[in-house]
Image (tube, rainbow, N blue to C red; front, side):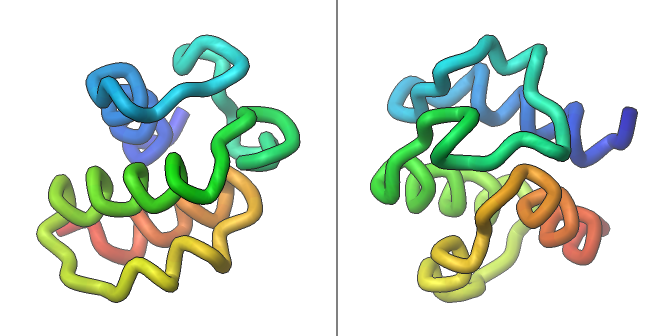
Length: 82
């Protein structure tokens, strides 16, 4: 399991305003954000800001709209982990 997936699960678990259909510990890279996890657009923006804060990035929130799967999020995290 990748460090990014572990970190993503932690972020989702520790953020009160991000709700998923499945337990955070069951989230895998192949899951679709809306279809499988049930995260809506507002939840995705909240997740983006939590990830951005964790990684110290200052990208525009519109980037989150391009994320369709957990793998997209993990790729972003991997590219920005220091």
